[in-house]
Length: 85
Image (cartoon, rainbow, N blue to C red; front, side, top):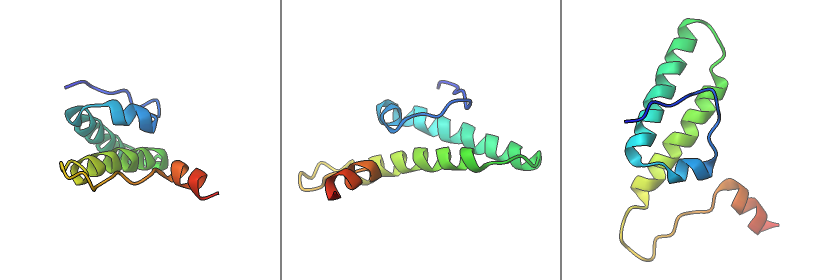
């Protein structure tokens, strides 16, 4: 499993291209960094946001991994806003 640098923010596209095991490793690294930051009394907001994006990607993959054709992945927030205007 690859070790990830937490100094940069990954785009949703980059997350969607990662393997499940890489995403799980990234999530573990982010959670560890959040824990370390809390112990050091540093801000964890950006890490928590990144954690949410990674967790959502993993959840979406699990939820929509079915072979049923009628299930489609819901649009991302940005895509939904563009469609509704």
